[in-house]
Image (cartoon, rainbow, N blue to C red; front, side, top):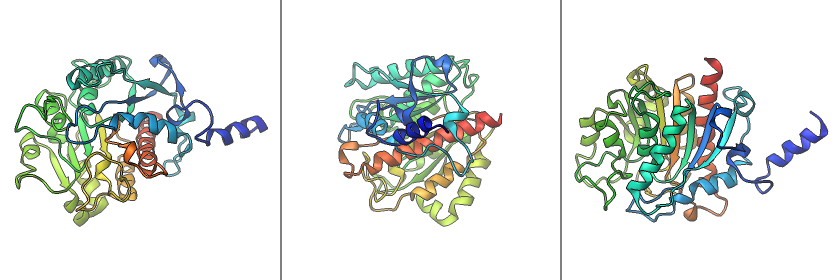
Length: 330
């Protein structure tokens, strides 16, 4: 490296230097210039039960991501030099208080990404965004999925398959409904999908029944602790088929001691450690992952060192690296 390149590398690791973008990627709306697009989805009206600060997630992750890892040691990979990765910016949501309008706009935004056949990693935003994202990526005859249903891998403390009512505090395509209506409407194949990390204090004893009725494989946190990482990964992989894979990562699947700033804490039962979550994700190396998201970050509830935002950025880096690895091996 030249002295100039060394100095630039040094400055690029300083979060306070330069214009903030996700992982210092070039900000561009030219999808033809990239292999992987990074997107912020500042939406928080799909989750009516909690304080609605989740729309601040993309801004805070841009703030902290500059100082995080640039290479993936476990994969032996530098995704930034191996692929063209851009920060596509945020989904524009001028009707921010209208959940249904926002989900429609999210769907249209990701429809355009799929038309360009680009893989995408997103930072939310509450968990309702996953519904809008997959509606957009997996439209009929999608260039990205070929119109196939996707295999979903959902890291979460909650199933989000609420079906007792057709709305949740007025939001129809809500953070509580998305994992249900994506199956009902033909976007996700529940039979080859897994919900993992489910735990907490449910409202009813038959709390898992909606997921089972839809066809999901459910690995509760209690089961994960019993069978361990290796066997959990085996169950996920054996349940997959050859359809494209989408990963959604709700930060509340992590233990509150690791990710305290999330929208629906479940402190009574332990969640994943960061090592457990990271190893589960890395176990999916080589899979045809078309995209992923990280959701439910509440920056205003974080510790002063922004640990939950940094954890969100670290999970985002794992998803980027999984996609980069696949693209470079195929």
